[in-house]
Length: 547
Ligand SMILES: *[C@@H]1O[C@H](CO)[C@@H](O)[C@H](O)[C@H]1NC(C)=O
Ligand SMILES: *[C@@H]1O[C@H](CO)[C@@H](O)[C@H](O)[C@H]1NC(C)=O
Ligand SMILES: *[C@@H]1O[C@H](CO)[C@@H](O)[C@H](O)[C@H]1NC(C)=O
Ligand SMILES: *[C@@H]1O[C@H](CO)[C@@H](O)[C@H](O)[C@H]1NC(C)=O
Ligand SMILES: *[C@@H]1O[C@H](CO)[C@@H](O)[C@H](O)[C@H]1NC(C)=O
Ligand SMILES: *[C@@H]1O[C@H](CO)[C@@H](O)[C@H](O)[C@H]1NC(C)=O
Ligand SMILES: *[C@@H]1O[C@H](CO)[C@@H](O)[C@H](O)[C@H]1NC(C)=O
Ligand SMILES: *[C@@H]1O[C@H](CO)[C@@H](O)[C@H](O)[C@H]1NC(C)=O
Ligand SMILES: *[C@@H]1O[C@H](CO)[C@@H](O)[C@H](O)[C@H]1NC(C)=O
Image 1 (cartoon, rainbow, N blue to C red):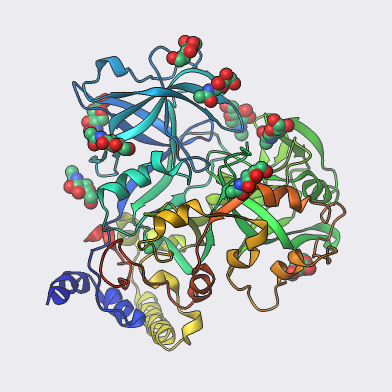
Image 2: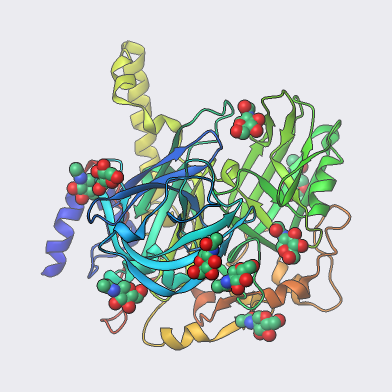
């Protein structure tokens, strides 16, 4: 009975919901999924993507823009007493009646710089596109009293939307206040960095629930591997595994790598793509006229002829995307063209970083479970035509030809709908169901969080089955004597894998293999702690913002 009451309003939303419900063959859920909140993202002339956060409301809100970062879960704001924070608008705890001072102090670092200060809890509000705030009370925030190269002009701090330290994240804050919700999820739909350096819209976040109208095709899910806390990584606190990359270009060159451990972080805080030295050098060796150019705090860049043509293809599970020179080559104000793909200064670094230029071409989803496990999803951005404004639509003159075209399109849509419904199960879109790519988090979740297993010995648990034809790298890596992987450049086979195996771990998930194997079929049911039997999923609703 309660089932019907819950389903009725959901199904009334639109036909897509109905189709998807029957698609997933799932008919009930004890807790309704949260509604998507649209968070506007700004992009400034320094290519910083930021959101607006109000802190405290007593006696009046203190309003800040915070840069987005996914490398950490820590939020940092410049404190009013900070002389080395670049003069950005700062937070004054002494005029807030809602601040709770905590005894500890904390350092937080990016690859560019570092900040440190005391820790507070404060009531915050994240600004939505309709002007309301999404309130998140009692949020842990670092109030910096000193910093070095951490703050960008006009941006008062960073909002950490990453995996760890989980207990300090806005995600854990919300999950604690919503114990019946299995996950906290959000989607990132960035606009590309603007070459003209002008500030403007940077896209949007889909807070609490990704917006399905912004992506198409399969979502490839990757478990987030936490970096070993006793060997702090200065690149990120988590990684996912990229399955392959290749760069193709003039004279048919094709540099590629797959079948080995490619630890990768995606963070819009950085405006570049950074590869290990061996990989980056072999790429630019093949691009005529490329030469070493400038150096940032952590990466070397190349300059190259502005008409260079090459293409980077990156694969995560079933998802692949390609960037060409329109993204990979940026013309600076001085007329020099510079490669977005750079190399680590640190010659021992083996990780891959994909910053905003890469993130802006796809739809990125982060999802955190009540137990603190993280999963990252990547999908293709839906075609721009979905976002025609009302004015643009009104301007279209519907002549006879257009009417005929509409009839044809309707026919195609009907055919596609029919085709989707008749697809064999193994190609069913996971995106048609609620985004909950997690395993069971029932009673033993507390123990499971403590049982860290070293990454190297658990390779079999980490990977969903590869697409047909791609190398079974888990076998390759585990076999003694270093079976060949498929690196096509010198240096690509020399990565020190034992070094990495000590540095990264994931939480124990006994059922993760089967869960991952099922993902292409349909996301697994999940259980609520101490709740009834596993709760099936209901579909993502289309056109959520309209409802
Ligand atoms: C922060 O960094 C400073 C200097 O690097 C160090 O002296 C201090 O102990 C660190 N504080 C914490 C809480 O880690
Ligand atoms: C803005 O959107 C949120 C979520 O959809 C809603 O709760 C809130 O009432 C809206 N605010 C206004 C001013 O419309
Ligand atoms: C945020 O704070 C500013 C003032 O600092 C205020 O004008 C604005 O209304 C606040 N926004 C919300 C959603 O509370
Ligand atoms: C704030 O959060 C902490 C844990 O993060 C909790 O122990 C504390 O009770 C909370 N305080 C309030 C006022 O909700
Ligand atoms: C910042 O605060 C810490 C801890 O309260 C203190 O030790 C340090 O001297 C302060 N730094 C500055 C520059 O005020
Ligand atoms: C480049 O090489 C990789 C691995 O051998 C292969 O998968 C890919 O299709 C090649 N790309 C082109 C454009 O030939
Ligand atoms: C954009 O601005 C940065 C610093 O503000 C500058 O270094 C860069 O050259 C500018 N790029 C263009 C294309 O104007
Ligand atoms: C990480 O730290 C090591 C040692 O402190 C340093 O050599 C390296 O340059 C750093 N790497 C990055 C990417 O900051
Ligand atoms: C973290 O690294 C230390 C030092 O190498 C190692 O002893 C420990 O087992 C690692 N922890 C995990 C969870 O992998």
